[in-house]
Length: 245
Image 1 (tube, helix red, strand yellow):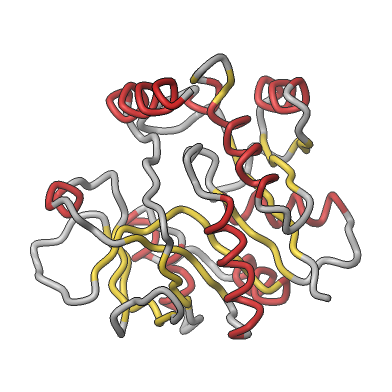
Image 2 (cartoon, one colour):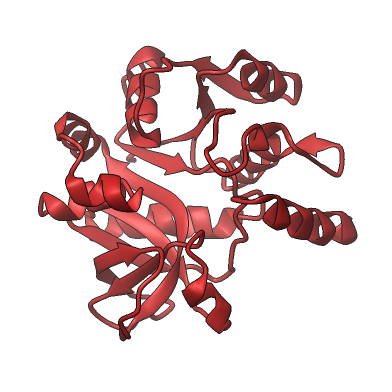
């Protein structure tokens, strides 16, 4: 049985919406909502990796696990690698990097990603959803992914490119969901690579993998996810989640 660890990198200094991990929806912070969804997947231990004591304390007060990491980390992937080494867990084969701003991510989609990555022996796996609104294509805050083949419920396809906004028309384009599952050895390899120009210019660290010929397998998610990048996103998400309860 191959074991999976979920690490959620989180920090207060988000460029577009500072302090967003602790914004409250239905009385609970965004980051603690994400922890709850990750735990519901029931695939392994869930830990928040942060450089901010406020986030650490919030996660702990809501029954989650957290670990302090360095402020020197340039990306979320660098942060989860530091956290993994600090945790010193010996029996982990795969690590999931789950973004901390997607409180509506479906636990079943997390579990399906884990199953697919292990079944397909993927170096890196991620999720994407169908696009049914043209505004998503124009929104630079929403990351898109283009795959080699059309995604279906029980298959996967290799990622060809990730981008925020493009004037070019693509086939097989999907809304990317902020989650990656790495084989531990692949995460170590990734962490040792220098940031690429492509990655820095587009603010997309997954481009570091593609630029270094590391394959990313994309699995179709059954449910779309609304991430929080702006105050408008937060207000919309707050309405959705508080209406549901």
